[in-house]
Length: 171
Image (cartoon, rainbow, N blue to C red):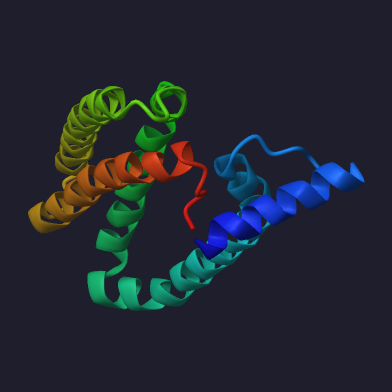
């Protein structure tokens, strides 16, 4: 369609002027041009999350109370620590999915395995956060909510991998 014709036109322009990269496929072209846009969107996202966190703190302190808020931040810190211990799983899945580009059955197998691995990671993270909540004598509901957040965080991490593997960079 129009996009394919536009990509072909850009590739010819780059090739004829030797000023830009030679794109072997539409996928490479998309990855090259979406990187600056993805960078801007990532910065905007981080700024938004930072501002939202700062704006929500007074409401959380008022709603939870100082002691429960302190436990909440401790549980979130535990969750962040567990998120940092990913053992290279996201990079491995992205690499495997990228290498299997075009082989739908191989991609489905990798995607299914990744889903169950991330489900297991989510269960372990949720259990660890819940045990930490019980260890710190946090209210049961708070422990359950942050544990659920840990599980959902793992599953969301899984679902972003396909976009990364395909070169969409979250856009």
